[in-house]
Image (cartoon, rainbow, N blue to C red):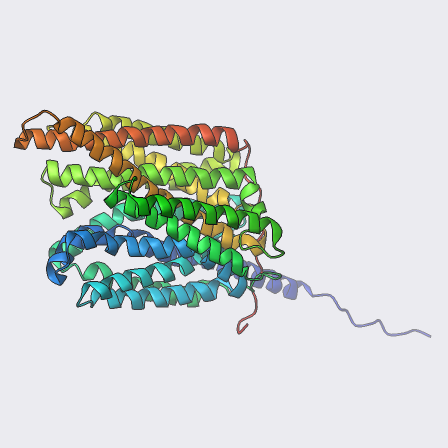
Length: 509
């Protein structure tokens, strides 16, 4: 007796072709979505980075409008740096704990509100409070953005391109802030240097809702309260100590006490991280030679980079008589150098040869650019003596930033992506604060030494100012040389490990 054949459970030819076409279309959509995600995260990062410098150019106008004194002026900058630098590690862990997309959206919304509050400020206290609030929400969104980028791009080739673009934004953002601050201050008002963040945050927030996939919070993550307290107080105290050293000197008793106490708190933090069951910063993140070397490299690079922004701005405006807008435009070769190296060179070479050669080369280019600026005189011309140095140094910064952002987050466990990302921004912030205070001290000493025994005429004062600025460039060049040696010793050769990618969760979770 014959039995009927069982019904086929396989797909027929047309159905198989249709399934393949659907899968291909889905893959294409996912590919496009990743690049829109990069655009969204890059916009969020740009807002945080340019806010470190955009207000600097607007300070004289804000001071005249709100009537605060020279002694108070530094707080408009320090309040942001203090909150941002002190809270980054906590912000990174909160992203791991509660979800990176959620923290990104909260950070964007809070940053927009704080910016609107600062733009509408009618007094000094409100302006400083708004800047501190910007720093708080910046510390939430910056590590969330970088960790989302880390888990979005796992293919080495695509990851190289994505981190090249993101690194260019991170490195060039401060220079773009100088240019944008000059434009807004000259043609609108200093208040727009804060208001401009509102539309940026809105566009980035809409992009995050539309394109950034929801990723489940990391499992097994707990908030280490003793670690939070020691890290926040230690990092915040260190940034504040450097800010005080800039204005009151390194021998100031309060500055010395702050440095000692902050250092002890950070040592206590490291000891705690070795002993607690769920550390805020698992030491495996920094003890890996690649990641640890990348953190050191970007911290040292921030010292040198801020020297260029600060002292070259002084030189262009005070010695050469450039307007704020013209000074901002003068930094465009720096931006061009960063864009060239980080988006053209790094994506091609990093997956093949790894970060060590690129980072060391970037540091040597940074040193070369600063040594070129070291030869500046009061009569030097921009086209011959400044522009080439800016492009060379920008090229070096592009190699460093794109390679360090990629390396510092490569091979991390999904549970550590947020805090590993936070450390990159922490290195930039602490390095920038240290560089500004340290190099200001050397510059002031060189200026005073030049004036000693000379009649203070207009030309002598100009030469004295340049003597201080070029001394800062020379010291910063030495910092880059130190960075090159450290990177050569610490970072192993060979490509970075392929990162783990987080799985998106269904909508509504």
